Image 1 (tube, rainbow, N blue to C red):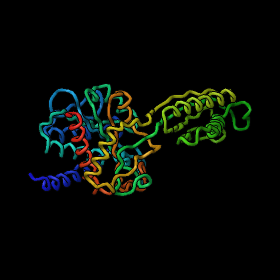
Image 2: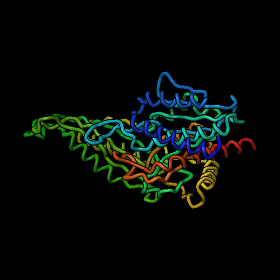
Image 3: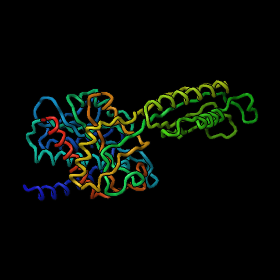
Image 4: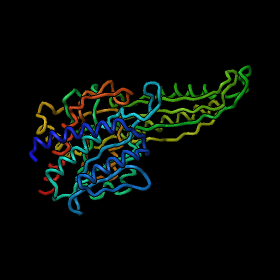
Amino acid sequence: MKSAEFLTNLQSEMEDVFSHLHANPEVSWKESQTTSFLARQLEDIGLRVTTFAAFTGVIGEWGPLIAPVVALRADIDALWQEVDGVWRANHSCGHDAHMTMVLGAIKWIHHFMPDPEVRIRVLFQPAEEMGEGAQRFAEYGALEDVAYLFGIHVRPIQELHVGKMAAAIYNGASTEIRGKITGISAHGARPHLGVNAIEVAFSILQAIQSIHMDPMVPHSVKMTQIKAGGENANIIPDSALFAIDVRAQTNALMDNLLEQVEERITAIAKMYQAKAQLTRTGQTIAAEVSREAQKIMASSIVEEMGSEALADDIITAGAEDFHYYSVMNPNLKATMLGVGCGVSPGLHHPYMTFEHRFLIDGAKILANAVMKAIEQLKN
C-alpha cells in the first residue's frame, strides 16, 4: 500500500478509535474495557501483548528480544466529574486523544518497519490521574531495556497556540495532602465546651496562605476540599475532612512546601487542642527532560509540520506521572510531545474539546521520533 493511501486509511481508523474511546471512559484502575480494546488493537497489528492480572493497562512490542528498546507511552484513565448534572467518568484531560495518537503511531511504524533492528514497545498506562500508574508499570518491567521513551499530551490554548508543537513539557510536582481534624462536639449554645473542627480548618487555611517561597519559581498551596457538620446546625462539629493541593515547579521546592504546610497544620491543631491526621496522596514529581530526546522530538516536529510549527518547550504547573519513569531509570532518555490542538475551555473542564485534525499530526511526529531514536541506537 502506498504511503498516501495508508495515511488516508489510518486517519479514518484513528477517528473511529477516538470515537470509541471517548464514548467509553473509565476511571483510574478500572480501565478494564479500555485495556481489552487496546489489547485487541495491538494483537490485530501483530504485536506481542502483555496484560496483568493485578491491574489494568497493556504493553505491546515487536522486534528482536534483545536490548535496547524504544518506547511510546499513553495514559488511559478518565476523570470522575459532573457532566450535565450527572457524576460520571469523562475524558476531559485528553487521554482518549493520547491513546489514539500513540496507537496511530504504532500502526504507522509497524507498517513501514515490520522487522525493526531494535525492539519497539508501547505502554498504555493506567491511573495517571492518581499519580500511581507509572510507578506500578515500572515495577512490573515496563522500563526493562528501554533507552528512549516518548510521551504525548494535548495542551490547552492558554499554553500552546493551535498548530504549534512543543518538543518537551516541563510539568511541575504535585501532591495532595488529605487530613482529618478531630475536635470536641458541643451544643451550639455552649461553644466554650467544644473544639470546633470548622474553626480549626479555617485557621489552617489562613496559615497555609501565609507561606511564601521564591516568587521566581512557580508554586501554589490551596485548600480544595472541606467537609464538616451534619444535618443539625446547632451542634459544634467535632470532626472535619479537608484536602490541600500543593504544586511546585521543582522537586526541591515541593519538599520545602510540604514541610511547611504540615508544620503549620500541626501547630494550628495543637493551638486549638485538636488532633490532625495527615496523609500524602497523588504525588507526582517535576519533569526531568532528556535534552537528547528533546532534540529528536524537535527535529521530528520540523520534518513533519515545518519549522513554523515548533514552539518553545512548555513550563506548566500541571502534573504528570510520566516523569516517574526518568527517576526510576536515570539512564532513560525521555520527553513528552506537547500538541497545540485548540484544547478549550481547558484541561479537566467537563466540556473540554479540541480540533481532531491534529490527531494524525501527533501520530506522525511520534512515529518519526521513534524512527530517529532507532537510528541513534544503531549508530
